[in-house]
Amino acid sequence: MAAFQQRVFSGVQPTGNLHLGNYLGAIKRFVELQTTHDCIYCVVDLHAITVWQDPEELTRSIREVTAAFIACGIDPKRHIVFNQSQVHEHAELAWIFNCVARMGWLNRMTQFKEKAGKDRENVSIGLYAYPCLMAADILAYRATHVPVGEDQKQHLELARDIAQKFNNDYSARIRARGFGEAFFPLTEPLISGPATRVMSLRDGTKKMSKSDASDYSRINLTDVADEIAQKIRKAKTDPEPLPSEEKGLENRPEADNLVGIYAALAGNSRADVLKDFGNAQFSRFKEALTELAVEKLGPIGSEMKRLVQDPKSIDGVLADGAARARVIAAATMKSVKDIVGFVQA
Ligand code: TYM
Image 1 (cartoon, protein in one colour):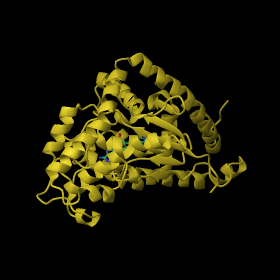
Image 2 (cartoon, helix red, strand yellow):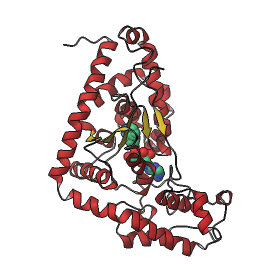
Image 3 (tube, rainbow, N blue to C red):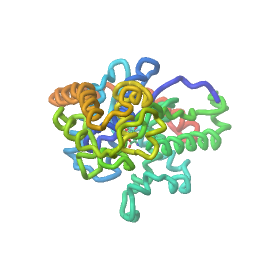
Image 4 (tube, rainbow, N blue to C red):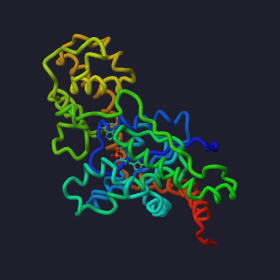
């Protein structure tokens, strides 16, 4: 494949509260990648409205996710932070991808099946076409690497399929225009570390999610120390003490989850955590986990609350990021239109 400039892209939906899963599975990794890559981080508001969003709540949420990015350590000056709807090329490229992707591919998307449930006839077309928009987000910047949690893996495979089919369908024109064998890169998902799939604190077999009815199932980034402590204290466990080796976590989903969370917060591995806490009772481990979670998340939550007090300054960050994103996306779109055969000025 042709050499592409290395570029990281990822997105987070502005729907409901951000939680520990979003932080450990995605945003914490976004921060780390800033030292090695040019990064583009997007608040994906067009994705949010695939299910109903109260408009005022949506505005608030867009600003809150932006505040979270900054509070967690993303530098919007050195990298790009913006909200999706300000760069119309996302929607434009998504349409072209709607015409590249096949119904059969989208019919296999497990997230759609889960979200639509039995109400399939009554969900929006946007919810079904969602993965094409996601592919457009990434490929508008011809991004090579995408950090995400485990739940987004299938969507990223679809983005690769779309890129590949576009490259094949238009190969003659792509070559004639000097792009070599491929116009779009086959993006690499970056899914690694101890917390690619953080589970609910109430049920170790269910993913931690914004939509769970119980707030005790998740730790929100804006939770204060008391809330964090209470949620960890009430977190489901089993009666055995912690094992001293990783193998002992098999078939113990709640223990595995809490140890994974500890490892991700501490920046080490499950094996390291078990070296310190092997044979410990949950009461002792939960105390240590609470202390660590409060130490790491407390400052983020307070900084988020401070930043959202100044919506003008957040909107300024988004406008500046959008202007810089637009330059890259517009260049991609111009080439795409030319490759597809559209007449343009
Ligand atoms: P979203 O908004 O649901 O989640 C944002 C990020 O958080 C990760 N995540 C988790 N990781 C570990 N454990 C969990 N329990 C957990 N819950 C959520 C998600 O994997 C994600 O990385 N479709 C995407 C947003 C998107 C996007 C993109 C991502 C739109 N366009 C382009 C990458 C590239 C989504 O709904 O994420």
